[in-house]
Length: 459
Image 1: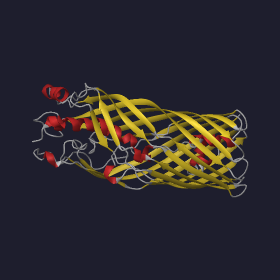
Image 2: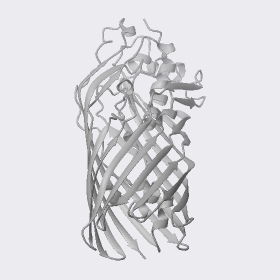
Image 3: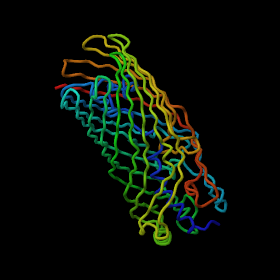
């Protein structure tokens, strides 16, 4: 029979390191949707300056092509759909001494687990001179919510994941000459996360209990501030062609927070004492280091005629720098455990897009674009927190200028996401992060709709 005391490390990995890990999975939670106007042509050419000051999020140097004082307000509704089917959960074969070790109860399918959210954006620019621009942007560059029913077959892997990140970035751009401009931005980033999952206290809680009979839950909350930078250049060799190159620096964040447990109402005082005092699984604090990636992008905008222009964009996100997660716990959480290490297996991702802008008249402008966006998670390491996959964008949009000082933008994108699979397995080793979570397989059908609305003011 398995020694329950030796499961303490695995239990802490389950509720701490495993919970924080999804916050650094892939482009699946990276929100590129930061400009209602550029949404319409799938963000093609946005690193070359786009069509309004919202392009400063991608490349601060792009501000030099605009004049005066400007304000851009935007809101983007991101409505993902993630349906799971054919879900099967089993416990590790190392627990074969227990009659109930094999199946993990729960429905084999789940309705949409991804919640719709609105990502706001705000941009302001002040022209010190024709060549020097000051800007300020407020954005939500990352964020997602997934939530499963309490009886979900993968409940030991995930129940709720809620991540909110806000960036505040003062920017500066300078036109060196008619061809070259440079820009930089300081990024102040705030992150707040809440993550929950079920805990099989029947497995780890007391020597005589049976797995699955005393399910409880763990809730992990954390927040932090961190600081980074952006830099970029634009090059315009003639009136028809403009190009831009931008770099967003990598950022390391130390998430500090608390872990809290709830227990089954059927847990006896003896069992509770064993869980809290012998295993040390009780409410307390901790922290985890999170290494966020760098992002490099190149874009171009080519003016084919007075009424039509063609754009392209390519961006590389270095998710491979997230190699492992080291979660450290306060002594009161588990006196015999000081930290827990989880290996991660992300890959770098590419985003490509092509688009066009057609100016019908002084009031109306129309846009369209397509894009391909890679997911960073491979099948063997995909989790139900973010069932990420490669996706294809189809976008369209329009702008209407009521006057020279007021314009409204709208953009729409449908994301066709490649069907993906869960294939999480556990070994017989009690230090395996999935030992107490169990094996989980299943299929996901994914898609998303994005609707962006913005208003631009030129003073």
